[in-house]
Image 1: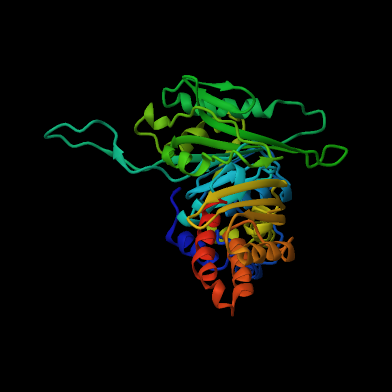
Image 2: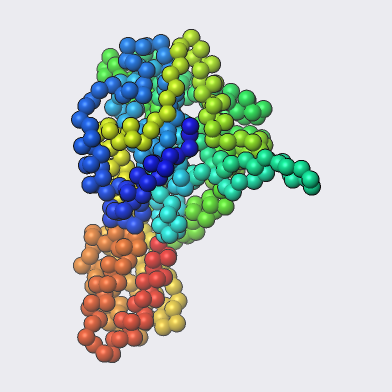
Length: 432
C-alpha cells in the first residue's frame, strides 16, 4: 500500500531529464505544463472526506517517494484547500536532504556529493535544521541467525514523514495542537513497547536519544478566524543510513562565514535498534490507529494518494515546479563568504568569494603563480561575470571556460591553459 509504484519511479525519471540551472534533479517546465493541462477543475479533492462531513478525520498515505512532490502536496493541502477536519499525511522519500527555509545549503551539506550521488536537495517553507532522509539501510535479519534455523529478514525502513494539519474552530481556539499531535506519536511508539518522551521544543527522544524532529507553522486565516489552521510536520527515524549523515551533513568549512541558521547536532537513534521488526508500513499503521483514538468520536477516512491523482491537480503541479526550481532550493540562501586555499605543484592559490542568493556577487583570486596571465584571466572573468556565475559546479565550469578562452592563441600559455586550469577547476568544484 505504501511502497512506490513503478509508475511513480518512471514518472520521476521523466522529471529529472531537465535541470533548472543545477545538475541536481528538478522538474522540467514542459512536464509541469503537461501535467497541468490534464485538469482545469478546482473541485474538492476526491481523496478527502466530503466538505459537508465536519465530524471526520482524514488519514492519507502518499504513494510518491519524491520529496519535492511530497512537500508540494503538503503545501497544497495546507495553503489552498479549506481543510475542515483534522488530517494526517504519512509519507517517505528516496535519499534527500531537506533544509529549513532560511538555511544555507553550502554550509549545511556537501552539495557536490549530493549531485554526484543523485541525492535531492529540497528546501521546506518552515524553519528548523537540516535533515537527511532515505528509504533505509541494507535488509538485515531481525534476529541473530542460528545454525539450522531460518530467520526473518526485515525490509529497509528508512524513516517516516508525518504531517498533521489541524483546522482551528476560531481565533479563540487556543488548543495546543502540537502537544496533541506529539501525543499521537508517543502513543504510536508505545504500541511498539517504546517509552518515548518530548524533549526541548520540537524533539521526541527514546533513552535520551533523538528519534524525531519536527517544525510547526500557523496559518492565521481571516480576521474572524476562517481558514485558520496549523501545520506540524516532521520525521521519525526507523532505519536511516546513519553513515550518510556524516557523508552529506558533516561539513568542515571553517573559513565560511554565514548568516544562515546552522543545524543543531544531536545524538540520534534508529528505532530498529530497539524494535528490529519495525517498518514504515508498521509505523504508519500505528500512527493512524493512534490518530483515530485521539479523535475517537469522529469517523475516519483512509486513502492512498496516487501520483497519477496528484498529477491532475494544476495548482499542486505549479507548487511542485516552484519547489523544483534552482531559485527556491539554492537561490533563497543567505549571503555568505567563502575562502578557499590550495597548494598546487605550480602555485599557491587563494580564492575569495562573496555569494548572494546562490550567485557569486564578487570574487578575487590571489596566487604566486609564475604565469600571471592565468590569474588575470580568472579575475577578469570574475569581475565580468559578477552576478551571473552560479555557486556550483556549473558556475565553476563557466568561469574556467571563459578564462580558457582568454588564454587561447598564445603558445607560451599552453601549459597554464591545458594543465594548470583543469587542475584548478577540479579542485574548486570539489571544494565548494
